[in-house]
Length: 212
Picture (cartoon, rainbow, N blue to C red):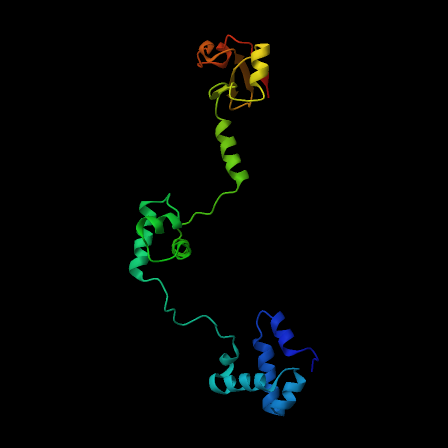
């Protein structure tokens, strides 16, 4: 018989049924204490499996579930339906906000568990997957079909203001980004009153600097 400890062997097995069956057969032939020594385990362990075999037969050697048979704090069906209804009606509300807004008596963790059990929580897509989706949309656009334009006042930058006043530097910066290609256009002006129309980045009267 193997000198390995019984519990070490069982811990590594996905199904210890056959090993327990050998233990019970050995105990029926040689007794409880010799079996405990042969299998490197304790006498109570041998008695436990021998008793289960006598009461339930071979099926008694299967591992029993240790899950609680009764949960006194289980969420009632009424509250569960309320939580599900609110999720379908307000899909953008998180569990914590839903609990706070509607004064629910269950925790936000319980609310998330209920949503997960009913398939109401979508798996969050990875960042690279979202970028791939956006890239496929951009590929259908024509060049200069989509332009993102922005105006920035530079007079609120403390380090820049004294130099701008003494050297008469521009106080307004315009940027326009061609979304598909990523081309970025910069232009500047002395004041916002000189701002041209934003219909096209090439329409600016100021000199443009182009970068990728």
